[in-house]
Image (cartoon, rainbow, N blue to C red; front, side, top):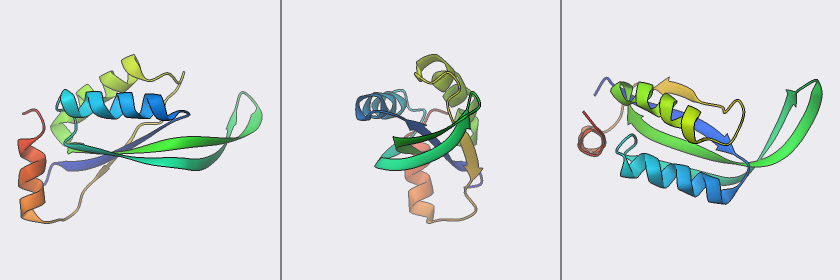
Length: 106
């Protein structure tokens, strides 16, 4: 399946992470979203270095859902500038790709 993608985003609280994940799956924008709790992010924002604990969301989806995923993040994420990075999937199991396709919007 050539259109499988992995996207990532982060948020600073578990409640928002769960809300975003559940809505993406319910709306079939993603087949699966994994939440990795308590990652440490060090970054510069407004001229200051920040050192924050966040939750990372690993989003399994397809290329044709990316436009809607981006719009979803812009509308529903609490950050002023949310991280949203999309990476192509190079290879994997065909049965997984079928499941991914069956559980996302066409």
